Image 1 (cartoon, rainbow, N blue to C red):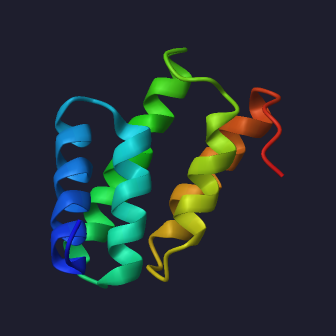
Image 2 (cartoon, helix red, strand yellow):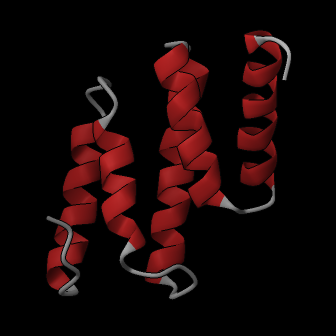
Length: 102
């Protein structure tokens, strides 16, 4: 990569393509980096829904339960007030299903 602009564009491509393909874990990680580099609300939306997608995959048994720990950390990297409700729901599910997240 020659410029940071190209790197940023590549990260956007990774985030969006992973999301479209249902690879929500990688989309969440990419949207997290994008949101930290540029506080554009679209990146928060992408990150939020990618994290919810990973959570659905965990519940369905398509993603390892241990991934929830990473997703909670990604969500904590946000200043958006909606994040507290999402984290609370995920932590309650984890507690009810004996998934360690702390």
